[in-house]
Length: 273
Ligand code: ATR
Image 1 (cartoon, rainbow, N blue to C red):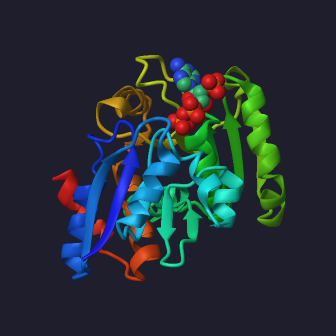
Image 2: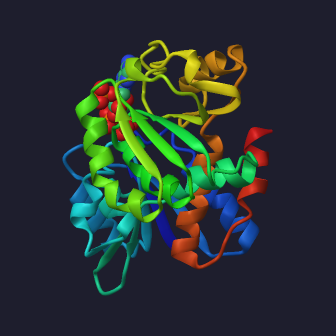
Image 3: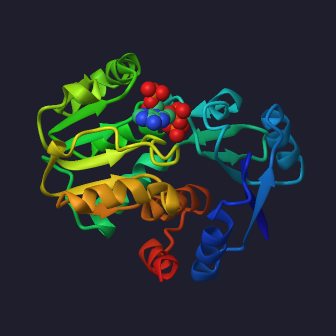
């Protein structure tokens, strides 16, 4: 059995072990996947200890995603743009390759599972923290026409937009940073990458951003997404939570590690049931 894990703090709630166990079962890959609670100041040590035990790869979750690239020998272009990694490949020669599959997971869930095309679409990304940074590059690569990044702290949205300027030009996409109260346009797809529902706060944008029938996506799932999903439904949008993104980012990590694509849509259906 090859050993993998998810490292985080807290990590008890993580659904990654169950998802990867099911992927291994369905693909016949010889994979064991554990959950590791890592002390807040012990990430580098945790990764080294895991490598010493023969660990082949790990997923990285809160709060270590931005620390992870610093440990890597090589970082993918996605990691360099996002400044964060969620997937480490641990090699026998001691080298570490870092990737970020969050954005690929989001794009796969929207386009394949929800059946909503992104090419040519106008997208609103709410938030400019780690979660938003992880998905902006893959959204641009998916061929969107326009992305506005709206954040309470405008300077953070501007910094994210500036870092992604060259990729946006390459993709011939418009990219704009705005304060939430300055939003006047409406959008085909609205993505909530803030923790606003968690804090019990209001949705940080006005309902006029929703085009009729727009997809309103919260990157969280479970109770943390509920406020945003209720708001979206009440204003005629199609709500979707981030469970599919979770499964799809795991599938991308599994593919990086094993070279095999697991049946992610089936596993998502099983979890939803
Ligand atoms: P994560 O890794 O989950 O993105 P983060 O990097 O701390 O966490 O970023 C949190 C994001 O949620 C930020 O965009 C934050 O806005 P600020 O940059 O202005 O802090 C946003 N956020 C958190 N609570 C919010 C609230 N109640 N209303 C609006 N935005 C909120």
